[in-house]
Image 1 (cartoon, rainbow, N blue to C red):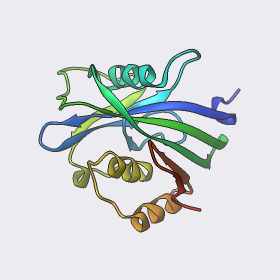
Image 2 (image 1 turned 135 degrees about the horizontal axis):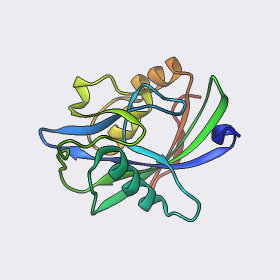
Image 3 (image 1 turned 180 degrees about the horizontal axis):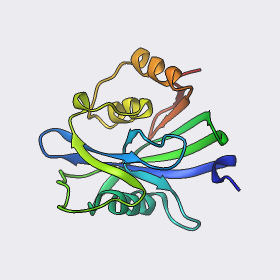
Length: 168
């Protein structure tokens, strides 16, 4: 069965890096395979969202996040070759600055890179996520255009805020 055939709970970790950079991974699986994304993945049954984000960060980048904060929950809907998908993504921001450990080969990722947001062709969903995390400043129109270009509807549920649709 396609695990994306139902709403899939997932978690990601925004990991600040030296030189005002952010940690990205080139995803190998899922609807956004081949894209530069923030480290993250599915939440296992019984696993808290924060624990999933910490685990995925470690598996994909080798970085051990000791402390982080939930800053938003996102819903992504769209379609890919396997059909429609609906992701419920809990987004956490790692405290501190984390360099990549030497020689780590990420799980289910083709590459790992720490780059400034202006120096990488990141996925459209990351524009809003990094803006909400305070590490970028993309306006709503730019985000909506990028999401529409990828055929994605994204809802942002800011912690302590209200939900809004970024690409109706």
